[in-house]
Image 1 (cartoon, rainbow, N blue to C red):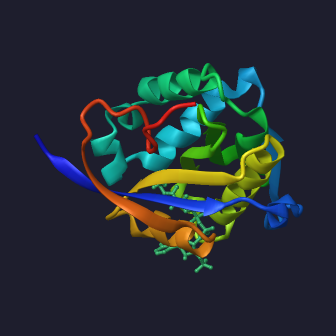
Image 2 (image 1 turned 180 degrees about the vertical axis):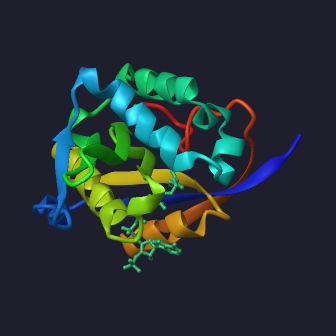
Length: 186
Ligand SMILES: CC(C)(COP(=O)(O)OP(=O)(O)OC[C@H]1O[C@@H](n2cnc3c(N)ncnc32)[C@H](O)[C@@H]1OP(=O)(O)O)[C@@H](O)C(=O)NCCC(=O)NCCS
């Protein structure tokens, strides 16, 4: 059995997270509805293709697995529609980024996945998705938010650090049947 080093990261949520989140020119927000499960799943699948996370979290390695992940997330008791977003590229007319978040049983926010397709990375979309989900979680009443990330996923770790997340625990997880980037459910 293989074990993977993962960081649990967290930060506080306050009024600053209420600011309007602007996307770079040419991109548009799409707010959550039930009918968007497939679109979220496709962005997840395309974004995680060939990544270490798709090996660790088996479901991320197939479109069917991604669909199940999003369906399951949408059925969690703490599912928070205002914290789940797609980003569309107006020029290409397709979805290029998504984020899924929820509230856990104690009312804390948990970021489950953030994903941007390869051709649209490095333009601030990941950062904007993160801010948008923090705003949704804060509005839903969360005052802290946490996530779990694979330690070797430096791009993601850096993204979270720059957004104020700090590592509070290091775990070694046996990941074969994990549900998502973040383990704990709402
Ligand atoms: C992680 C991910 C969402 C970042 O998306 P993104 O749109 O590129 O992020 P941003 O453009 O907002 O970049 C945010 C920060 O990440 C870091 N970053 C972005 N691209 C990077 C790269 N290629 N190498 C190193 N750091 C990078 C930088 O610190 C950047 O800030 P800066 O542009 O001010 O320097 C994207 O790489 C992705 O979807 N990866 C695959 C899925 C994944 O690993 N998700 C996270 C785990 S759940």
